[in-house]
Amino acid sequence: MTALESALARRGARTGDRAGRRAVLDLGDVAGETAALAGGAGAVVLLGWAAQSVTGADARAFLHRMLTQDVRSLAPGSARPAALLDVRGRVQGEGLLWALPDRFVLAGEPAALARLVPALARYVVADDVALADASAAWAHVLVTGPRTEAVVAAARVGLDAAGACATRADLGTAVALRVLVPAARGGDVLDALEAAGARVVGEAALDRARVAAAAPWWGAEVDERVMPTEAGARACVSFSKGCDLGQEPVVMAEHRGRPAWTLVRVAVAPGALPPRDAPLRGEGGATGRVTTAVPAAEGDGVVALALLRTDAARVGAVLHLDDGRAAVVEVVAR
Image (cartoon, rainbow, N blue to C red):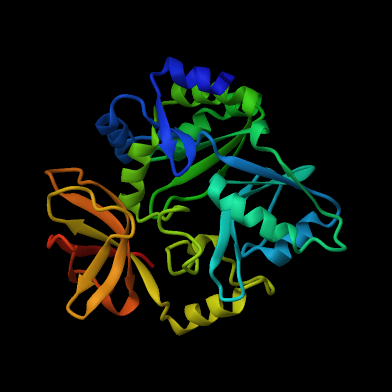
């Protein structure tokens, strides 16, 4: 057990499988953890995340050329979400790209990096670029909630002492900061954040916060079937940089204002949580699909993120699951 895992175990963390990786599901009080994210600040350890080190004299120029993000202007110690697209503009993988003084670190869901890294490596021809797995070297923490910035500011001395970098990378409409820290010092970061007023929470609460904030995630809203802008992941795309792979169809869809799909949040009648990809049907038939479903904050209903055909994505639209339950569009993400 690593030092970070020991720190989580002392806090009563319950771990389990999440999309093929070991994750902190909760710390025994999902309702309380959800409340912390809604009204204060919660720290989520993204256990099992993958990390890839990118080094070499051409690393910055190579990543700028290949990824959807403006890498040239990325300052040391900061990070931005970025994706690799195919020629149709579909997402081949995505992650959070950190700029460190001597390298870049691309961090994300293992399933996302398992697609992204080999695809990226194929384009390294004459460039002075080296890719290396660095998953064991780093720990990853997401802090979100309305008190996030105040808590991270109060924890700054402890974060600096642990060698951590912290950067703002919002979670949909919610304020969020991401923290990258050497793996051996992950427990110290949790101590510092807790002392500053954050509550350590699990990913069950994070999913509820994501749905409330209409925030996409790899393996749920974002995958190889969609453009990033269709899935609500517009933050990972720079529209002011030069060309990158797959940029043209994404830019064309953006300028025309008519992407094929749009991310929405729907309120679903009480019942079981619909699985990912459960069809949503309108009067004309198949209209979209559920991506993430969680229990409603109040009552026994369900709220969910879904991808709908853009022509059906309007507040108040009534759709139906195959079991007959109604799903009413509450929010259209833009």
